[in-house]
Image (cartoon, rainbow, N blue to C red; front, side):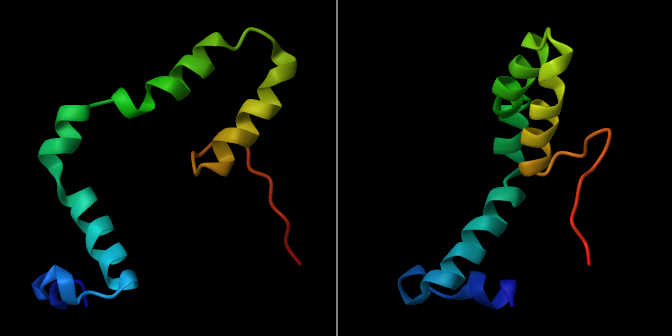
Amino acid sequence: MIDAALKQPEDKDDADTRKVVDFYRSFMDTAAIDKLGVKPLEPMLAQIDALKDRAKIPALIAKLQRIGVTVSYMTSVQQ
């Protein structure tokens, strides 16, 4: 599906196909990823580094969990 979408002219793509192609190209652009290094993570790393109060750990863990970071413990709701 992605190979077929990549071969279509961009002006003929529908919005959903364009999103798939753009997403695919974004994670296949290893030159840009290498160039950025950890820069995209710096704001979150700064928040972690600034944490000085144990009482604020649960909020930080919740924030990390919401953005998909694996944390020391997980919370979830199941049936």
